[in-house]
Amino acid sequence: MLCGMTVRHRAASVWRLTRRELRKSWLKYGVLWLGALLVGLAAVQFANWTNDALALFLRWIDGRAWLALLLTPALTAVAAWLTRRWFAGSEGSGIPQVIAALHGPDDPRRVSRLFGWRIIVGKVGVGLLGMLGGLTLGREGPTVHLGASIMYEMRRFYPRVSPRLQRMLLLAGSAAGLSGAFNTPLAGILFAIEELSRSFEVRTNGVLITSIVFSGLVSLALAGNYLYFGQISAPDLFPLAFALPVVIAAVLCGLAGAAFNLALLHQSRWIAPSLQRWRERAPLLWGAALGLLVALVGIGSGGQTWGSGYEQARHLLMNHGAQVSWDYPVLKWLSMVLSYITGLPGGLFSPSLSIGAGFGQWVSQWFGQYPQSALVAICMVGYLAAVTQSPLTAFVIVMEMINGGGLVIPLMATALISSRVAHAFTPPLYEALAMQKYYAPQAAGADPPRH
Figure (cartoon, rainbow, N blue to C red):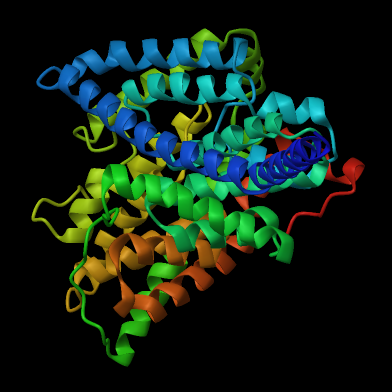
């Protein structure tokens, strides 16, 4: 009798110990792994939906471009109103929101307004409406915001959530989102270090890398091991004279990227006060007016500026015969500014790469003795680095997207020069938007902008 009670007591003790260890392992590993898997799934599915939305818009206006004058303003107006009324916090790319949460004051209410299920619904639903209207919006920044929001919701599995844990989840989700969007794991890590966290803490790096790995596994399983733009054809060695087009491309893209940043950060200087008041009072009309302007630019460009610009960039990069018009990067730049100031959810990565590719065609025409694919890739890096002023992230993203190992030095040099040129005129865009819209760094004691 006594022996039986002892055995049962020991079995109960072992079971309690096992449950305790299982729960500890679940909180330490399982929650993060599950969150990363969900981020990878969301990245792949969102990519499919955005492609379908743009394809549907192009089918609607095929052979009847005038229809865009109705569709784009109507969908933009509805999306702008929905964002303002129900989904405040989901606007833009979402990366400024992540930066504000990571470096702003510890304010749970503010963070809950920038992340969570409401933001996920707004980012996907309203973002797709904008893309269905042909606006120049990318999906990669929104995927970063989606990843951060999914990981933010995973905090509900923890009995206690400290500010450090919350920041760790947001950082891991953001990096996993970028990695899943581009199929670029190294860029995801560098993006988290260079753009978001500005450091690489020993206790965070394991979580970060694990999240990227699990998100990447889902992307690999569902979309295959693909290169975002495909394998480019470029020699591994270039003559010393190739430094001249690299420097010219870097300066050109640096100035264009700085102009874009200034246009977004100083809207009060070039948008009349009466229009600014109108934007606040009548978001439906504001969205419709901007949608009409985007439609006019799209029709004026012969349909080249619709959407993120992925196809145009890919054709230029692969040198697939048909080129874009000479004014493509200027018109795409204009369409991108108009689309972003609508306030809709939408990113800057793909449109920036497309604008850079258009400038690459310019440089290729000036220096016809060098492969177009190499010069296009260089300008893609240059413009993205100028806008984000995160040269390492821009360089690694493009290198991973095209498997451009032979262009390592030119790509890196362009990224560094472009970012410094832009830095002379404007602060880093995402950080400046975060400070401008989501927190006051002086009051919060946050890091000052990197001027």
